[in-house]
Structures are given as structure tokens and as C-alpha cells.
Length: 152
Image (cartoon, rainbow, N blue to C red; front, side, top):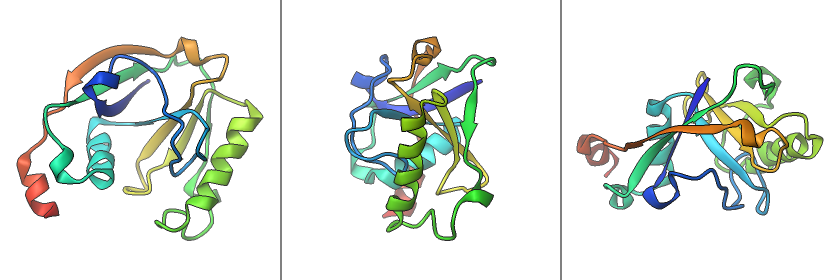
């Protein structure tokens, strides 16, 4: 399976995590957020950044996850109502922290809070299987400026 990450160009060629808090992790927990498609990665980026920050400084990293690697999964049917709300990060962060502490898998499949029938994949950089994940490509991130016009 391939997963996708859009990041600033200076981070695109390495699999590293900042430790910043996100929907599925607390501050200090080092995970990488990826998506099931370039399109979902674009939507995730647009939601989290202002249009003025977009430009040629972004790249798409394509990461290969071996087919025989176990991927844990959280189904939207197992999540409480409102899990995807802006003020409900504590719900999902505690679930992500539980997954991280279990050491169960290197990859966690979760529904996107933006398009809940699509999926994000959270990568645990401290898991023993993490070195099995490989960057197989880095592409320029090209976006249609009309997307930014709609956001303004």
C-alpha cells in the first residue's frame, strides 16, 4: 500500500515527526500523518493551512507500507458522536495515545475528520517496524489556485 504526505519541501525526503499535537496524538508523541490519496492529502493541507502559506515550497511524499505489515484500525462506527469536531481532539488524542502505548502496530488507519468515508494513516516513528516503511517518491505539490479563491 502507498500512503501520501504533503509537507514543506525541506521535510519531504525524510520520515521524521515533530512531536506537535494533532487530532490523534498528544504533544510529545512522534507520529506522521499520512492519507490514502493525494486528493485527501490536499484537502487535509488546505484545512490546516491558510492559503497564503501554499506555494512551491510543498512536496508530496509517497511512502510504501509493506502488504504484510499489520495495520491497526479505528472504525468510525466505534467512535463516539462528535469525534470529528474541532473541540473534540481530547477524544481522538486519547485513542491515539492508547494505540501508541500498546505498541500493537506501526500504522493506525483512522477515518478522516474532513471526509469521513476516506482514511488517514498514522505512522508511529518509534515502532520496531517503522524502518520497513520506505519513501518511494517525492513529487512537486501542484494545486489549482481556484481552491484558494474559494477559501477566501
